[in-house]
Image (cartoon, rainbow, N blue to C red; front, side, top):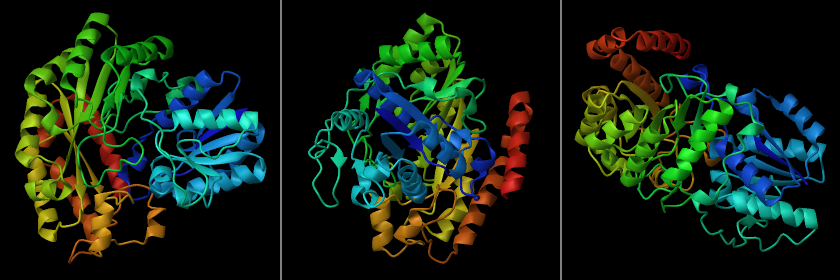
Length: 460
């Protein structure tokens, strides 16, 4: 059995400033599936092709497929890269007609029937166990129908597999990619080599823009001991010096992080790290413990610049809470990043115009602005569709590669005007005296800001 796992060829949209900033993270979902398959089927040959990370275009991708000649191919399918994923599946079939192609990822779970027009099957839910069982059945020539988590016919009911215990998963198969190709975006790391980790699945919160089609709403996290073991492997086997935790809500279980910080201090690894979380899931004592254990930066999903916007998105907190969290993190000696979403249904020209001032009140060291991206299985999509606010068709959403361009109409504004608001918000934020003074006080921040300015000017 030769199994190929593919992140298909695609790029950032030209509107995305991060497209110039070198953002590239290893495909941990595919690497986890690969590791699970190698454990459950030791005789299998497994290859991972991360086309964006490796810079592989369609022609190079086809050469790699031809050289490997897979029996089974799993392709990551996200809503904004559906067409690219479908083209990759077609190329695999052209080169290896007998290869079974299967879609995975959030779009496969949200709209499996749509994926079945381009793939032989679609994985619904978490992929590790289903993909491994699929490989075993294919190798043995057994019937595929009835396999939990595998959709084969549009409209047929699919039994979702039981949620996996995160501690039961092997470490992602990072040996299958070149880790030197990857790094977080500018301002997101200090030291290289740097890589990412994900230590939890599922989210109990109700933000209206979030897709939960794969992991669901039940929060499941690795134990502190399991997290420490993977961090140790990264440091000792791969020479990693910094880790970017990509959990949506890293501090959702406060006791887990307190325990992890104690273990890290005792272990004494030469690692710095950063994480993402909610503003209502931190406190001064926790932030100080994180700083003492090697954390240097915390990113907060503030999302709504003002209370009205936070309410529209279902965030469950207000702007004052965001301001307090950022202040507490800075007092603990941590850098702060704040993420915002513009153009959510219900926003107006006035709320967008007020956003820069509200962002300045929170006063994070770095800010990142995205536009509301209506994934099909989210309240955001349902609301925008019901109110006639979607600026694109469902078919066009399949090629909306990321959230750097507006996709939802704001009454009284063109999409170009929305984009202009975001660009001016960046300028107003970073040209504030307080922001400039903070950068001038730090040689590293000054150097990063100079690089960021070059990226911004190319984008602007």
